[in-house]
Image 1 (cartoon, rainbow, N blue to C red):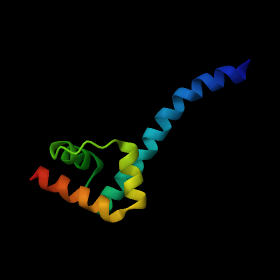
Image 2: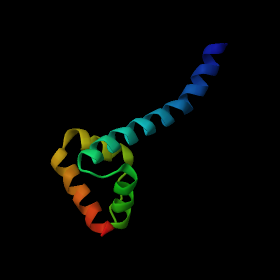
Image 3: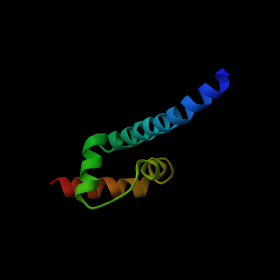
Image 4: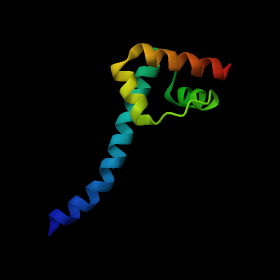
Length: 79
């Protein structure tokens, strides 16, 4: 009986865990470009770049040049 309760609870917990992981990855990549996570997300929003955290973390891991371009656009939008 407990297994059903754990499965129910953890289906909801998994969503939170992945969001935390994505934010941690984005923050680490942003700090390599001398920017915090919150300033990066604010800059992207002001620049009109609508990208979710999952895709942003994947870009940060797999394509550093594209992530650097996003950071540059975010920095320009904050000026």
